[in-house]
Length: 473
Image (cartoon, rainbow, N blue to C red; front, top):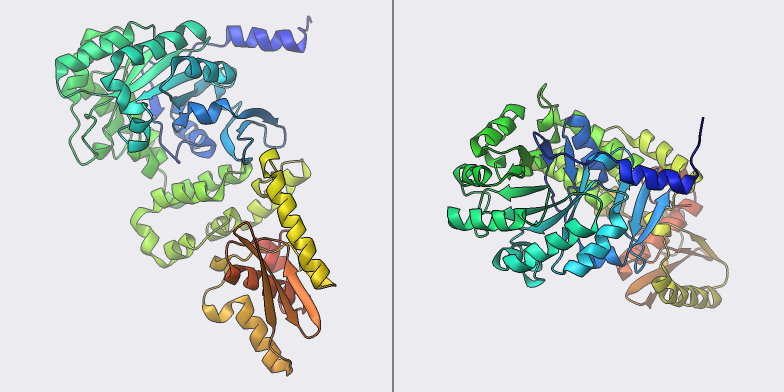
């Protein structure tokens, strides 16, 4: 069997990849903080045909570094200034993935498109977002007021990229104006156009205008993707109903999918807890940021955040803590150990070049502390407030009570500040204790130092601290 050299195989794959078809599709809409990798993969599992990323701004993408991550099986685009993941994707979604970009410059948009096109199957330009951040930057809905610039961006991308280009807009106040705009954009060579069936100034509480989309669909030949019907979407059948009302080729779902992404299932909605468990497993598998996972689970829980379990969930700070609530704690611990063994570096271990000066400054401060207090017993233990049900259980309180029972003098604390971060040494019974983890304020630094003391004194178990994320090594 003839085998192509690796470089030729990659080139061949790019040219022969099946072009994304936007007709008769159910699509996960671009949603800030929702459209990250775990939710996109879950949407595909639930029956979505195409998934969009959250809007990613060109200026953020253009400075990112493309970095394959063998441990996760992903391709990561990393911000070199702080080590955060700007965009993460994997092979399971590539053929059905559209990245939505925020941009106001054709040349910059093309440069980003060329950087990304091997890892996505479509590029969408946000021309409908009414938020102030987008408008001030000349992006989003600001482009509706400058159709010549909007057309230039699309035409530049269509002529310069190997993947299909689309855009997403909102309707204008009048039908004829909307039709004229869509015809102008369609003439640039785009493969489809997503249309939110509300104007720039209308919000979810306002009714959508499917009649406008019907008129537009009859006036152009490219596929129309209808968006804006979540208010009346409660099950799979409602998606198709909205598509028919709009006379659209496809339908794009935002808030209804954010609340329950199994709305894409023809068989019906999944129970909430089953859905959350599936989502959390994907978060663990792909090392998703805890704050992002928490936001998405909050969207699913909605009013149930006020229940005892919901309130416990709201106190969570780590993915491990969230997983414990849905009985996935063992899975999370096992998977994180496995990924670390395979070479995955967590966000806490990322050290971008720009952070080197800060790290050196912190190390110098740590050395100064150690020099001043020789023989400090140190462990890497962050203080996580959510692991303590009341003030009576806080590490400082526990250590104070322990000292009283043992007839010892109460512990004393000395705290060092460096670059708005704090690290404390706890002096107790002739020994000194400190966490190497720098905290955001003096009180948290003291709690961390007390935590190290309690562990060393045998008042806390290392395994329990590892399980709740307090003991990092």
